Amino acid sequence: MAWTKQILRVDLAKGSIKKEPLNMEWANDYLGQRGLATRYYVDEVDPKVGALDDANKLIFATGPLTGTSASTSARYSVVTKGPLTDAIACSNSGGFWGPELKYAGYDMIILEGRSKKPVYLFIEDDKVELRDASHLWGKTVWEADEQLHADHQDPDLRIAAVGRSAENGCLYAAVVNDLHRAAGRSGVGTVMAGKNLKAIAVRGTKGLAGIKDPKRFMESTAAEKKVLAENAVTGTGLPALGTQVLMNVINEIGALPARNMQDVQFEGASKISGEAMLEPRESDGKPNLTRNGGCFGCTIACGRISTIDPTHFSVKDKPQYHGNSGGLEYEAAWAVGADTCVDDLDAATYVNFLCNEDGMDPITLGSTVAAAMELFEKGAITTKDTGGHEIKFGSAEDLVWCTEQIAQGTDFGKELGLGSKRLCEKYGHPDLSMTVKGQEFPAYDPRGIQGMGLAYATSNRGACHLRGYTVASEVLGIPVKTDPLDTEGKAELVIAFQDATAAVDSAGLCLFTTFAWGMDNIAPQVDAACEGDWSIEHMLEVGERVWNMERDFNLKAGLTGKDDTLPKRLLKDAAKMGPAKGKVAGLDEMLPEYYKLRGWTKTGEVTAKTRERLSLPA
Image 1 (tube, rainbow, N blue to C red):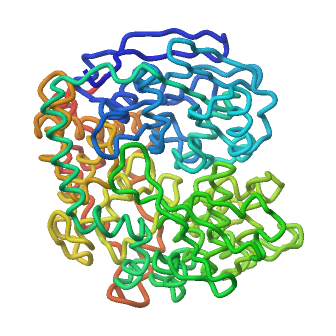
Image 2 (image 1 turned 120 degrees about the vertical axis):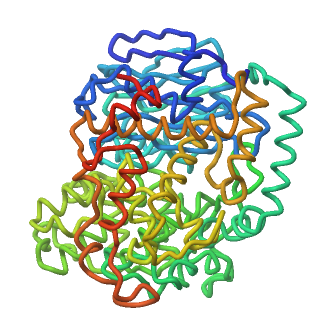
């Protein structure tokens, strides 16, 4: 069995820790990680609970393939209600922390209540303790990680922690593990800090509980690793350039949002691209990219490890940033670069380092700074609000200053830490917030990639590319090529991607495998590892069930079909340049068909028939 069949329940208010058997009936219906953790969550938490209320719960969960020999088996998820969106939040991370939890003997951790003082959870196989974290409070993720390794004198200890931003109430704070991997979106780190939980440190030595059919599993995983290696994206593009392989591609097709999504192309894109990361700098002759970085069990190694010119203005007096750390990925490079019109690669890299060190989602951070820049441009934000500092599009210095304010929790930094929706509402221009359900857009403009507009609008955790990545089809031609400027057939396409993604997330695998794998590649691996029948049909049913369960929770929490929309800018202001010139997002053409195909009402509610067919929880 690929599950350990054991969970930890930690009551932070009481200081109690219990070990419970995993609900295997639910495991058969929801598989693991995203699906299974959400099933536990909706069973135990009132949808009306405030995200930062003590009654909210926080669940760390692995998938059945996490920690196995399957490629990209590093994943774990954090499930809660997000303070940025007040919707269901499930943030996914790689690295090495997830497999370590499995090797300690646990599928998930359910965290309840709020500790009276700062604590961290220490797990060493059967030994599980809440320990004082007063000496860690106020420290960055990097500092807390270093301190815990020193305290325990164990270099193999794996740590997931929150930084100062979470402690200061930044609504998009992340949980960072292994220094630069993160459960990054929706504010799951804010919830963790709100419970006075600074970190979870894990050391596991038990290995896996077992695989249903070891021989078939090894044969299946070996065959699928070969598929990844021979694929142009997973075998060549991602290893060479990481996700930054997309910067110039998306810019060329006119779907790279810039200037707070006022434009669909950025003239400085090539300067912050994956190719630019490989070029020697004029100052010291060294490239931004030092080497690849890979998560546990990954045969793709898309991660970037970077260095900054030590004489660059952002770090010249900060030697702690002169070493190697997690480099730019496409979404971060876009948010802190193109969206703010900053084409300074080292400045963008430094901002990314800060996001890793202090646990902040770079997508929301960059988008919020871009919104602040537009508010400043319009005169809504002035130097009186910022303490004398200007915030201008294209200024690397202003970008760096804003990021440092958020990390440090200064007065204006705390305003930026609320996200663009609340910031723009405060300063009288709510339409300048480029969000869905309160969460900022990723790096694909719906005017140039129509399917992504529908995917953003209907995403259960707010605007997100990792809930239905139709870019694969509309831009890369995977699994089939569709026209990015056409709305026809996109409802069916989005649903297919959303359901498949939910299944992949629940298995414990990385979504990037789906550039090469279909469910016919994934289901046999799950079936060989897990007890029961895991056919393609069963896997896709799990994905559909998870998606509808998340939707149902949001409806009970107070969201409605009216929240399935896009900012007016994308619906009314046509693209001014590129192949999408003259186009707006055609959401109105796609949404009714989406609801119909989902088996929902015309207003987006899950029907009784669909609930019964998928056996959704009451």
